[in-house]
Length: 219
Image 1: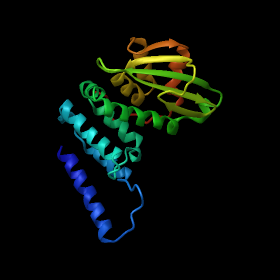
Image 2: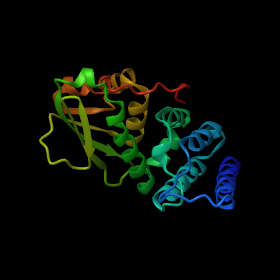
Image 3: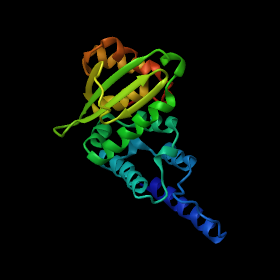
Image 4: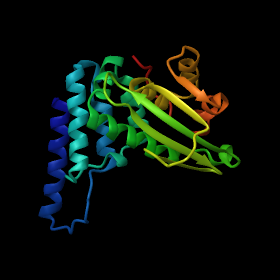
């Protein structure tokens, strides 16, 4: 938690310097991506309890959603991938059980898919994937992804007929989405990811994206 306090104090000092210099602030000014990357890199996830891990991420979520000068979209995908990779399964499950934080992080990951789509691999693809992501006894999170002719769109419901429906837990999805195609295939083979429909679409899906590899092995 000291890391979070130091980061927030540094951010406040940055704002004060700008105010003293009488710099005109743009509407919606946000903490730079480098600052969020630094927080993610400095965070010693292994020393946090499951509850503390959730509290840190939820604080960032609340600052983002309140317009308080923090935007997670400015954080690099590499830093986000590394942060998830360093988290334990128990920490990710605790995150998944927090409804607001879960939806915030899932939306962020799905939004980034378009940025990392490999256009050359998807010029002749037209596929719709339904996602059902479960957590504990609560209502599952549902999303739909459409990859067509080198573009990618995801929403909770695009109103399209799916080619394949994929069901897995939120924590397994987080691992799968940030650890590459080999992890996804492993989850498919072991039955932790359930597929209904065109199995080939599910097997090829993550290969359509250039997702940064985590800098550490998942715990």
